[in-house]
Length: 320
Ligand code: SAM
Ligand code: DTB
Ligand code: SF4
Image 1 (cartoon, rainbow, N blue to C red):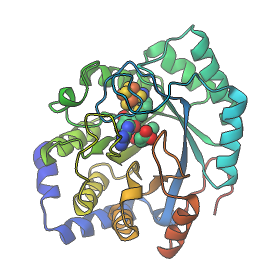
Image 2: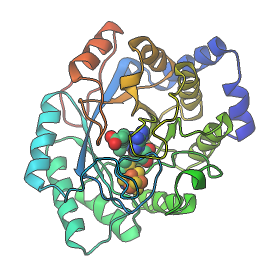
Image 3: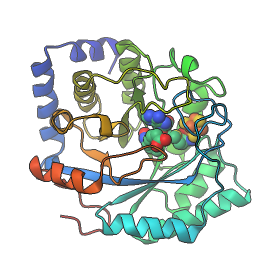
């Protein structure tokens, strides 16, 4: 969709927008799929000390956030966490590393490949987010069993330089190109609450909806204001603005998993219900994101039950 089209969709009367998004959701997620919410569990396999200066991020070495720098986790510890996530009903395991990027041929990349093979053997969808990569790294990850690579564009190309100075929007697009050439599914979304305009949010959707193929999943994060980062005092995202953006995302990317991502601890149950109605059909599940808090698993299961939604079944996993 073009920016003009997205603008027209987004600025319709709220209930008209929600009605259209709901219709798109029902048309593209038929036969019971429409009530299924994919549960993904996150694990930070390498925390803190990142060379990049993303101004929202607690893991950047540029800010004093209290997040300690750690080394890459041992494969056995990651597998234990993935097994726990599977037992709790997650069908997708997403591992994040606070790196600028990875390089084939290094010991740490070999260790990541070993971790990926192990998690894949558990029958879960494997998602990784390791920063920048090229064609060699992308092919090796695909071959090791990665289902999806997460690399967010976060905001519009115009606003991106206000948020990050150590890499460019074009660097992000280059990595996304390598991911798609290797045949991995692309998980790519953004953050609301950085100080961006509605136009920036819609420009992000314009870029995402013009990828070929379109992203398999689109995480929509609301800024978790992390103490010590430049954005620590930013005001919270308005829940109705969030619902409007989720609805617009559903219309722009009808078959994407739209993931209600960071920031749910600051959303009411009712606000989350509105977002599910507007087309969100995935959440991060488990009481921790990478370094920030997430709702308790039991509260999320209770919320899904209250809304007559259910956890989605995954590859080789017998969820309901
Ligand atoms: N280093 C890798 C990268 O930047 O691609 C992967 C990890 S990074 C933490 C993944 C994504 O998490 C970011 O692109 C951003 O969208 C999101 N994120 C990070 N910190 C956040 C925060 N404080 N609030 C909301 N989302 C955040
Ligand atoms: C995404 O879009 N959100 C997740 C995942 N992809 C890697 C990360 C959210 C991080 C929130 C802040 C933190 O935990 O430090
Ligand atoms: Fe590093 Fe990723 Fe955080 Fe940016 S978002 S500082 S690249 S971990």
